[in-house]
Amino acid sequence: MSTYDHDNFEDDFEGDSSPRRDRNEEIERFKELLRRGGNGLKNIEALEEIISYYFENEKYEESLNFASQLVEFAPYSSDAWMKKGMILNNLFKYEEALECYNYAISLNPNDSDLFINRGITLDNSNRNEEALADFEKALILNPADTEALLNKAVILEKLERFSEAFEILTFLVKENPENADVWFELAFCNDLMDNIQESLDCYNKHIDLEPYNFNAWYNKGIVLNRLGQLDQALDSYDMALAIKENFPAAYYNKGNVFALQGKLNEAIECYKQTLQFEPKDVPALHNLGNAYEDQENFTEAIKCFTQAIKLDNTHYESFFGRGSCYDAMEQYRKALTDYNRAIELYREYPELWYAKADAEFNLEKFKECLLSYKMVVQLDPNNYEAWFDYGDTLFVMEFNTEALKALHRSVELNPTFADAHYSLAKAQFSMEMKQEAINSLKKSIQLNPELEQKIENDFKKFLSSKEFKSLLR
Image (cartoon, rainbow, N blue to C red; front, side):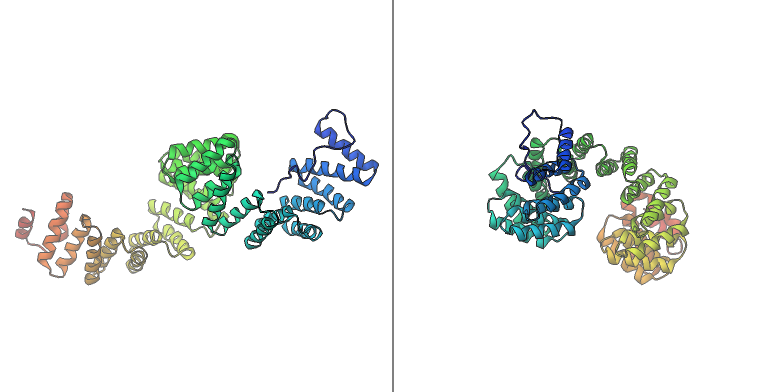
């Protein structure tokens, strides 16, 4: 967002040599001067003071009103049109702002500031290539313009040309190591390049220069989180919140850290704080539901997921979450309905297919269950548990050859998975592979002696009493 600087607005107003009054009184005096009329120069100077005052106080509508008067008084002043463009930019009226900048450039095509400000508005309009071209034009006019260089680096980041952005930012920070804005952007660029420790170091440099920048503390928290330094990340989010209390993103990320630490009560309070500021925040509602689900408070979790779905009926994660709650409550039909809806929205999610398969198994929908397990192992071919469940279900359905292949795959992926060896033994016995079956059964018992208690019931149709005794020895 653009801000006025002293090159564009003069603090001094000729004709008033009295001690400086309260700024509000001064602005009222300038307004009275406009009402009385006077020569054009006095009117222009008064308008510039009033525009500057309202702009600095973020009263953009009032500032725009006087900027419109200014361009009427000075229609051939590129500076006046630039001021109006900057105000319109801050009102998110980007097309109107661009019209002002275009007219200003037609009046003064050699002013680098005009290209910088037009580039900022193009950037805000997501017209990144055009913005980059404007910053480069500004640098042709003024190669030493650090603001143009910094804005160029920001655009290069957005265009994912990180190494070029990094080169510019490194140059700028060497030229002026006291420039807090450059340290901030260099930190962000390092983060985008996965230079996490370097990013943290740069945020620390920035904070040394600007200790009350809540965005810097917030971003530092994100970096610390990525480094696994969760307690330090919480401290950073707390600093951001101490500076800016109404900062829902900081509460949200703080909740996520607490959730990672298993501190579910604290996580729930943070998500609730987020929702106080942004009651329609779907990710916050979803994560609040997750926290309740982890506490096995399924009723509250379902309420949260349902509210998230009402706000965004394409949020497949909340359909999945609500389905998982119904599943835990043994309401398998409701669970399956939610899983199916989630899969309609996003098919490439193996965990979702896995949950659907389990629900279908519990509903004895074995044919559908097999198709779902097959999807799991296609999407996640190294999931040994999915191969085991797929093979076990194939065995239940008496597809013994296919069951044998699936169970062998589970054992290959995890040779220490006792249950897979045990089910493999059942499949081998059913295909009269007695020695292989006995070897698999022995292996399963070695890995998990508790399985021995199940043998007589599961294998009595395959083994005689004598073979049982021999095996157990």
